[in-house]
Length: 191
Picture 1: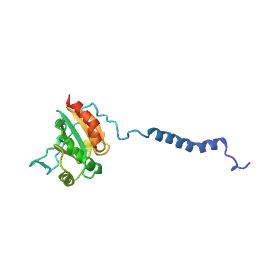
Picture 2 (picture 1 turned 30 degrees about the vertical axis):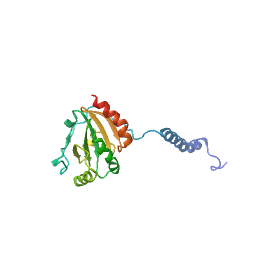
Picture 3 (picture 1 turned 90 degrees about the vertical axis):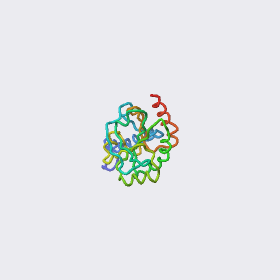
Picture 4 (picture 1 turned 135 degrees about the horizontal axis):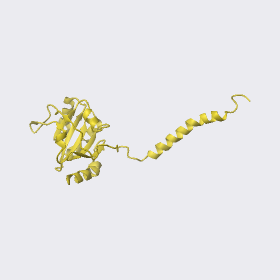
């Protein structure tokens, strides 16, 4: 019998290994279909917000006064919504009208962390689309965002009296503002 005739038992097993790997990956893929992949766990939920001090976005004005930067101490009272954004971020532009709406909620203070952005571009972005923020801190090197566990922007956190109570990954939408975030803010405002 020639070597090409029929594979031996060990050669058959070697030929089946790629098929078995493919089958396992297919099962994993199909088992994950329909899951919400935008929900990323955060180790910060239920813990104090990380310590940070961010300089203000130079030249950003509101009602004739410079807008302040942002620090951990600014989160110690009330309910603060922290939005991580940048002018170069397309989804940040999409969510911006919803941030303008959210800023009208008197139960919260909306603040921004400007992530790895050129100051002139960030000012132009807010000047063109409107400034919903009570304060904007500049995270030029991204260190603060890493400490917050940011995977990609935009991301939004709800902080109640210094404790992170919720994290939203991706752009805010009308549905998210009327759904989960509204519920979280209502609950946090009761604290």
